[in-house]
Length: 163
Image (cartoon, rainbow, N blue to C red):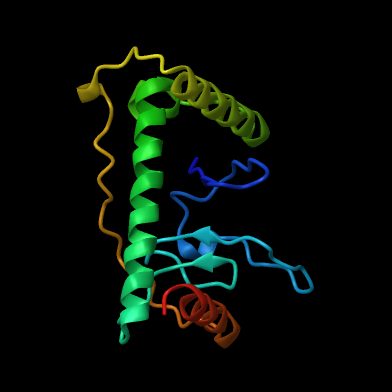
């Protein structure tokens, strides 16, 4: 089961996504408003609610956007590495979670809460070399053409925050 990490949100949502292909990402239903966005790599299609890198950046703003997206993704991947190292049940080699998706999400949220508690209390019980290095693996870009509305959303974000 892949996991989606939500950073700086008012709520915690754990769900399937991380190892899913772009085609497996649920489509936004018509009429729904999206107030937040997710970060994806080039393995996902660009959607109005999913920010992905600009494939061939032509402007400095698009380059800055890609750099910021890359830094954000690196932080997320590093956090996943720390969670997998600290809670071996989340790591494929350390065990598998043979529960319903709802129960797995509850376990993941509990692990995240415990992880945050360890950080705020500055508890150290892992050796530095036991944690994964958090390097981001290269991902093949999706060959699908993005919808114009989805591209417009990304373009608006680039113009608003990266000019």
